[in-house]
Length: 434
Image (cartoon, rainbow, N blue to C red):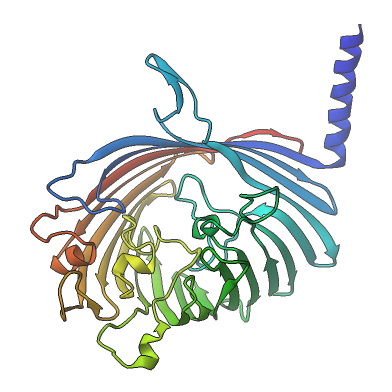
């Protein structure tokens, strides 16, 4: 009798809770098969392709009240078969694959403004500098405090964070070790956006990021990134641009002076979308020998922005070190064919080149410059329903001698990088009190 009363009380409590607020439980299952013979790395005649399946699993709890909201997302990311607790006949679990993706609470503080605190995703503009990096099975989140104000076409956001490594006592830094494996010590930004007209918006982003000096006390090197993003949309035409400048101190304490400029246009005509874009990321020019230039670091860092969707799906250019600090110029025409509202085929080609001259590795007084080859990316996506999508892609990189030398591979030993994948995304809503 007692159990029945407890069960009835729980049902009544849930019904009362549902009437007072909105509560939702959702999930995500995202297995992805990959054939890797050139993704991130460079294949040679001494390497072989790898085949594997990775899987993202998430369970999300969302609670909405009139004046506050809360979100909790638990994730598990694994490669099929890599569990570290297993026997010869099967697997049990992986002790390091489960973690918290997001946990935040959000409160309305004044009219049109809110504060969000906790682990959260940041996505701004076309995600050049702040992104959720969703292609990565883990995704990217930030422990931060965010204040946001929106009114009449204006948006004003301020975020603050400070990260500890926790290698000593709880919440105490141990400065005798490499600080949190070169992860950021602090991330802060001010974001201002105005919808100037119905077609045109302009935003300004001011980032201040800090890295602890290597194995010292609490010295933190701060670097600022400031600039603008503009977007124009009218009918079937879309145009975008970015212009950002970096200054301050690099992770190694060197003065920084770097920039990025981008421009992109798209036009959709019935079932066909065409477009083109160009990105210019500054680099360290090895041909300039004057002391004033060499004393500064000139390679632009895209920080927490997307790579996969911008600089080729094969992720050959993740950091300034990917081109030996020579910067990058990426010119990319693109084409998409929409078979119907549910099926789309996208093609994009990247013409890559160094933005500046660099020293050729292991060659005295020899400089490298110019083309790094090109990459063709093809992606097909089909939505079976709102919850289920199947997508697949193939990428091929057309290498040259400069690419091989920049990557530290003999031009005679390099193979054509190839990468293919297929992914199922299933995102059901398991329960909703709406």
